[in-house]
Image (cartoon, rainbow, N blue to C red):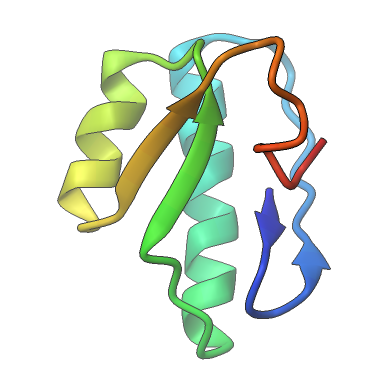
Length: 78
């Protein structure tokens, strides 16, 4: 995860690409950013994300935007 306002790349290792694992990693990074005073309000994702992550983003009131896989310039993490 790239945090634009904090100018930092958040990294959380994951064991698999399962929705639950990715969601747990996102929550950890989000909590760390939130505690540092950089609560994200927009999350830019590639076009592959689960409904589980979508529910969590809605729960934390974080807007999200999807990016087509061929538009790397739009996604700052890439």
